[in-house]
Amino acid sequence: MTKDLFKKRQSRNRHRLTTHGTRPRLSVFRSGRHIYAQVIDDIGAVTLASASTNEKDGKEAKSWNVDAASSVGKKIAERTIAKGVKQVMFDRGGYIYHGRIKALADAARASGLEF
Image (cartoon, rainbow, N blue to C red; front, top):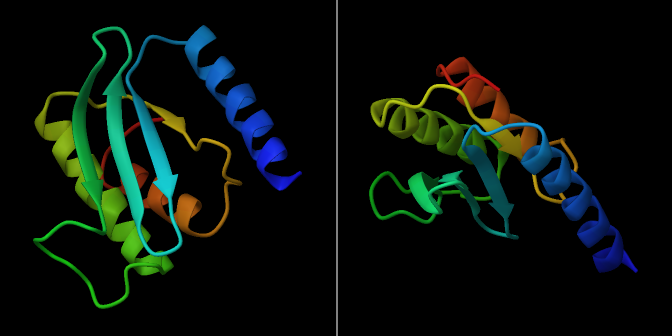
C-alpha cells in the first residue's frame, strides 16, 4: 500500500515536470542513511552534476540528518553552476517536501540555483 502511494506521487510529479518545461531536473533520492542528488538533462539523456553524502571527500559523521542534506544541496548547486546551468526543475520523486528533502532544496536555492 505505501509503495503504491509512493509510485503514484512519483509518477504525478514526473508528469508535471516533463510536460511543463525543458530545463534540467534536480532529482533527489533518499535512503535510510544517505541522500543523493543529481541534475539530469532529459533531452540529451546525460547527468550534468551529482552530489551525495556517500562521497569520499567531505564525508560527515552523520550522513542521515538535515545538516548533511543541506551540505549536499550546497555541493550540487556549486557543481551545477560551474557547468553553466542556473535554472533547474526540482524533482522530489515520491518524497514529501519535508525534512531532508526540504533542507536540500533550501540549501540549493540559497547557493544560487533557481527553481
